[in-house]
Image 1 (cartoon, rainbow, N blue to C red):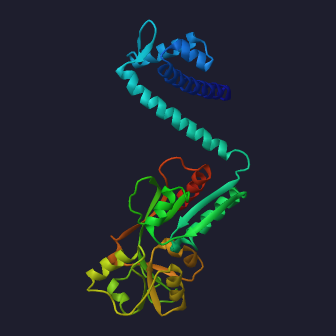
Image 2 (cartoon, rainbow, N blue to C red):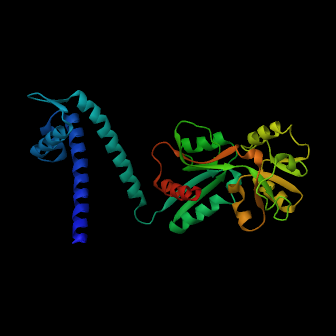
Image 3 (cartoon, one colour):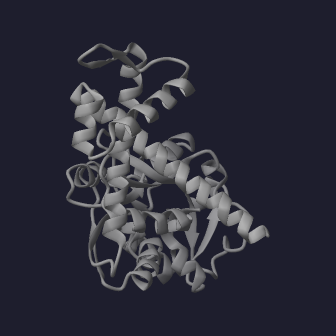
Length: 313
């Protein structure tokens, strides 16, 4: 009995949704044609069915949506407001149906991502391999970029489906699909005196050679702000625009660097590096952001974005 009852309830919901979509189409076409008869001919539907559905909608709203003249129908003020919603709803439905059609079958095609270099050996490969396992016939194109504005432009102009990196500024024609808040910390070899500690102070780091991001990287402004608070830049520095270089020099020993947990998750899991919070960095938060186009995302880009959302938590 319960199974039959549930099926009846689900069938009722499906029928209600179909009727809702149908009445939106009826209102839109009557507004375009200016009469129920012309709309009925266009849609190949009985005029009485259209008239009945529109009358039922007007009863639900408690106000007419058409002014009825002997030879034509025109929208009332309420109808004008409603029509804006109806047409946007129908456009969104068409977009979603197109995405669903794209995803049917074998999911062939290509999806592209631009990314900052620090993510190239950690979260991005992990997510891409999960995506490829589920979609083995989809080609994935990955491109390293260092300039946030160029990455944003690649998505806004349709050259890339997604961009992932830190601290993207707001721009038109793109939107944030996922955001993870992270703190910079000190990264050290597993046998370093800092390893295993719950936190360190920035002044303690001055005793070691620091491998730091150069001025072209989004990490640098955060470091400069903190160095200024602690009395200026240390003199014993190695500067680079390569996250991979920061990791490698630190693994060799004798150096420390400053990165986020996302930058070193593979090395931490392998026991090659350790992450230790820095007290002064507690309020210095970075934002790891996944960007997509503001309108008309590709179907495969949307699927890959879901994998990234799950990874970012």
